[in-house]
Amino acid sequence: MNLDRLIADAEICVRCGLCTSVCPTYNLFHEEIQGPRGRVLLYADYAKGLVPETEKALVLEAAYDCLDCRACQSVCPNGVKPGEAALDARVALQGGKPKDTLTALALRFFHYPLLIDLANLFLVFYQRSGLQRLVRRTRILERLGLKKLAFAESLLPEKPVRLALRLTGPKRLAPETPARGRVAFFLGCVMNLVFSEASEATVKVLRAAGFEVVIPRETTCCGAPHIEEGDLLGYERLAKTNLDFYAELEADYIVTDCAACAAELKKYAEHFQADPVYGPKAERVAKRVRLFSEFLDEVGLPGDVRFPFSTTHQHACHACHAQGIKDEPERILTFATDYHPMEGSTDCCGSAGVYNLTHTETSMKILEKKMASVRATGAQVLTVENPGCLLQLDLGARKFGPRVEVKHLSQVVWEGLKGGEAPGK
Ligand code: SF4
Ligand code: SF4
Image 1 (cartoon, rainbow, N blue to C red):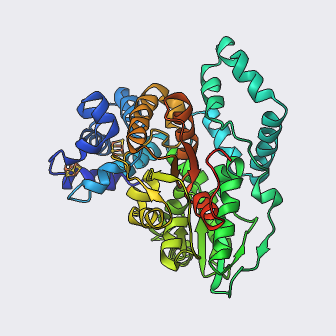
Image 2 (cartoon, protein in one colour; image 1 turned 180 degrees about the vertical axis):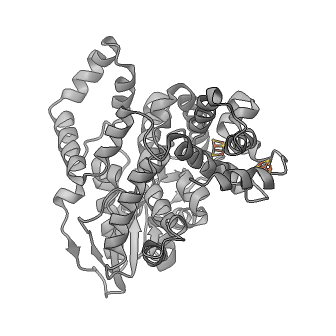
């Protein structure tokens, strides 16, 4: 798809290099091919047919070396989009399909919400049966040479995972104060799998703010994992399912506590722009989508929020660079907590979809630097609004320190409304 866009990006790039200063991979390797400018030029050469068949694997490798954090897009004066170009290049080089069978199987998992619920049940069992402690204490996965699996396992939080909200939550909840409207809460896949506790807090805050909350079970994955892996066909199938449902749903807002889901739901409007059926549906959906902090900043905090511990905030790339949401969570935290801004809070934490699984060494270098910035703030609680970042930062706190509590922003707001809970609870 979009080979023209790859060429256009290179044509408007004036090679100023501003983007390289914010690119995590360029800053680690100091090689042009590991930076936005070099990547954009390479993709354009490929799109123009200048890359020999034998070299195409190198273009694909360059596209996957990019974290798609889009920090470069936030600073580029000419509107070049190297992060999005990486996704276009992956789609083009793979013909809109996953790159291998294993990836295809993993992506199929996200097509079936029931499988996510079953995975949540397994995770709850894995933790509560003591199996997690045993696996970690014996280091059995490392000993068996299953390095990737051992790393994936280490990403799981130590705190008990709750049963998925899709399994336990009611479908409709009345507002707690005089009604101001109706919100449809979009259940994110990884949020539902690992962070139901945070989504419960999100729903409670929405109700406290005076909104009726509906939690549709018809929601499927937003498609972000698919488009990030070049699986255009899978992405469009999921997007259309969501659009068919949400375009007709009577709700004033569609709120999600996952930055990647919010970015993708909004992006549908651009993706289906030329589609006579799904274009108008995507427009209707996109204009009602809000990320949690964006929504709360718009409607106002639902009362006196006193969270009695100091906080700092990591801006998920899908919030600050993909949607321009930066001031909103900071305003909330400044009002509700003793907020300590972090240097480099808009720099990627190294999670980036499955980048931490595919590029573990680089990802850990990025994470170590991030945790040093967290330490410098002296904050007791670190907040973020994206499940991948929650997993990565929680690992960072265990692996590199400081041992801060890593929470979703909605948990801090909800605990603040109740008068606060000590970190660790
Ligand atoms: S900041 Fe934009 S115009 Fe400048 S080199 Fe980077 S992509 Fe090109
Ligand atoms: S999206 Fe991030 S990693 Fe990729 S080129 Fe831009 S700044 Fe670098």
